[in-house]
Amino acid sequence: MKQTRRTMLRGVGGAVICLPALECFGELADENLPPVRFGAMFMPNGVNPPDWVPKGVGEGFELSPILAPLKNHRSNITVVSNLMNEAASSDHIRLTSAFLCGQNHVGQKSEASIDHLIAKKIGAGSRVPHLRLGTEPPRAQGYLTCSNVSWNENNVLLAPELNPRVAFDRMFRDFNSPEARRKAQSQRSILDAVLSRSKSFSRDLSAYDKQKMDQYFSSIRELEEQLDKIITPPTKAAGGWTPSLSANKTMAYRPPEEVPDNAEEYMDALIDIMILGMWSDTTRVTTLMMGHGLSRKNFAFLDGVNNDHHVTSHHRNNPQLLKEYEIICRWHVQRLQRMMDKMALIDEGGSSLLDNSLMLFGAGMSQGNTHSGSNIPILLAGKAGGAMKTGRHLSTPTNTQHSNFLLSVLQTMGVDRERFGKSTGTVDLS
Image 1: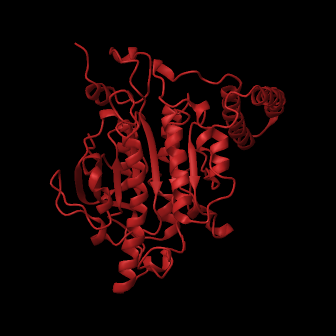
Image 2 (image 1 turned 135 degrees about the vertical axis):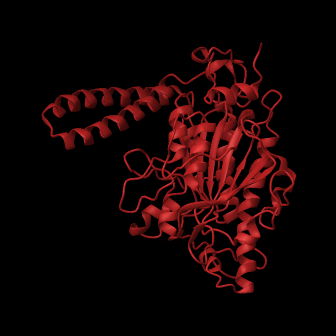
Image 3 (image 1 turned 60 degrees about the vertical axis):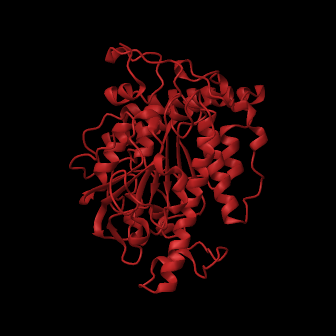
């Protein structure tokens, strides 16, 4: 009997990858199904929990003031409450670096972030395996850990691109240009020569130096794969599915050279690039830092706001600052709402890009006023191709490890892991 799409996704765990046939599981896959994409959106400085947490649990929940912009997408979201990130009391730096890792990176080696692990699983066939974007440079050298949520297995931060034009060009410009292919072929030849010499050199190295060289070889291999995709660009997605937007038809959407001065235009330009990347199957994994973890972005352009983001987060229960804090947090949710609006309109053969995506939105910090890691604001948007049951508020037991949730997201996206970070179990997302 032919499996339903939902059964297939849930049954094999990895069906989010668009394979010609899942022979190893003894099941037949529909080759024309679009792939599932993953996105993460980090919101800095936390929230005031009473303004975020919905009233009611399960399907009968009521959207909070901050989440109110998502009223038309209520059936497409899953809000998850009572997750504890790191510790009940922590700081911006630790809570930011643990957002997608389950453990912080301050003075210790932590997990690779889930966006990186998911990209390794489902992004290998994409021209850009993992698109990382951001809106703010680090405040200072000592705060680099707070300016990043993506990390690899070697504890190396994977920095976001801040310029919309540069990010766009890395994905799309000269996608099929003969000049670009010639240049890539030349770079590929140089890499081959460097790799050959390096392997010969590494024979007499110490164990520590060999480990470093292995990391070096790994980075070269990643670059090789990127160049190969320029030399021989993919003509269609794996499994026979073809995106409705061709990557070489995207130049009409190219952003202006200058970074927009307007914060809303800037953020929306980056979000549009994320959508284009997923729509054209140029990337299947995207990450957006809507601000670094200590963001002091000025939101005086919003009615009712007179202070920067960080000041309002340390409101000390001042009614005016609490109101400003709520307005700023709702503005971030409105960016997600706009993204969902657009993704819902992109048809992929009877389902939408939103249906075929899983977007993680939230913050690593709960109460900015106290640097609390308890009950952090987290929601998932999209149905992950049918693997997610949406339209719910999941209230987990108090202080459930955030790592449990992250492990569940990994498993939903087909990454085979039994533990992650500080996980003690999983959160049922199906």
